[in-house]
Image 1 (cartoon, rainbow, N blue to C red):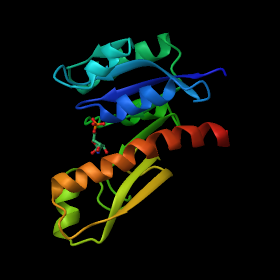
Image 2: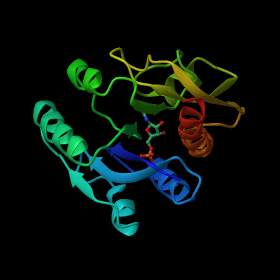
Image 3: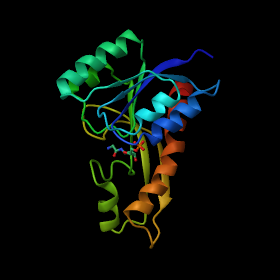
Length: 187
Ligand code: GAR
């Protein structure tokens, strides 16, 4: 199978990155992770790039510089899909336009509910009974693009932010790869 070159942007633990890398080693998975870009030198996720011998770049710089260097690398490596996985910078409109329809993100809520940060705290405070995660295309508005995959879980009485995060992340690992497969099956 001819695989599409993809890049994953991270800022933290990189557990979604790890799962995508593992799945991408399957012959039938539509993408190859050709590059990892981290916005932080402290991101634990970098260890997964190292472990699986994937080229990575750390761009611990301001947004303008980040995007300039990232764009150059993405073009140089013929990257056709950018997966944001715990990437905590907001990309500029220009950057998003230059990769229109080719950037996807995972968010730990059932969008359009709970866009932005501190989702689990807000969900528990509002006494929601259900939550989950959403993989969506990135457009110029925050956490707003078209949904590709959503996964839902019931919130239990005993849940706190940690347990909820853990359970939602388990769903994220399935949702992200499912979304990547879905994009290329539909195209
Ligand atoms: C994930 O739970 C993801 O949904 C969230 O950050 C976590 C990253 O975990 N993303 C956002 O909140 C984006 N607004 P990971 O680094 O272990 O994959």
